Length: 432
Image (cartoon, rainbow, N blue to C red; front, side, top):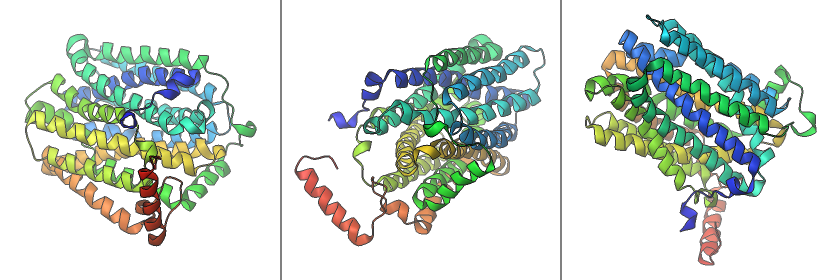
């Protein structure tokens, strides 16, 4: 029974990982406050779902640039220093939102500029944070540490949006953005307390050649590349957050509180799902698990688009979030076992570009389709496209379906043998 639950051993055993985890929890909640507040403020100022979607698009190029360049930086320099710098930079971007919201006539262009700047620095932060993980946690605790790090993101996704809806109504946009600034202060202190995190061998030189080495490794790893592709498919077609302000205020007849609940629901499901990830380290066919999770995500999103009942919609979004977090654990586990240590920063940067860039492209896709066919059409059609996309990816990259936990891809004959062996191990009480 204990296998069902998340294993908190890494938090108990490894103090530096615990510090990194706490800092990410606090700053993550602040960032989620800002994401909801920016979207809702933009909709209040323009009454346009397209503008809300375009704010996400404006973050794409800075985020991709920051992630790819930041990945090379993380493999060359002390990752602790990078984390210290990015906390300060992201706090300054949020401070710009504080000033703008305090004006008698807030400017929409400031939302674009500050959000884009924050995305770029976040892109730098994530590769260093992810590449630091193997330096703080031994291999035997890695999968559980990944699950815990994923869990903290989901806690932020629940608490942040839920507080945002209430806080915007109670204290206003400027104060909400100010809270975000303060959370980066906490993350800054945590980063200072970490030890030096210099890459092995003193690091690799930065530059285009370093970046090319990372992309060359990715091209040679079809399994790893397919996990990136399937996540892009899910986020581009099945991420409906750009229409949450419109659905919350028009379809469901609410205000900031209902909008906040819509943003929080996937995170609530993801948090619940992350609490039951103890079994993930025993799954051999991790690629297959990823594909199933993405199908569940797309199906839940499609149903959300056709059932105009708030509580059912929230439950479906929660189900989608639970499927997504389990998929994320397996995708990150695949990365950790297929990428050598000296490439962790660069491939973590590419991974983050996919994870964070996909939802921005999804914002654009949802915003455009909503303008053409309405918010509900944008949601259900996107969910359906996501499910179809999974089938296409499995057809084009069968290695994803045949993957096993050791990073090996089996033939059909080997797969049958592996299943028989796993059954025998299970009957003897050994984990598979």
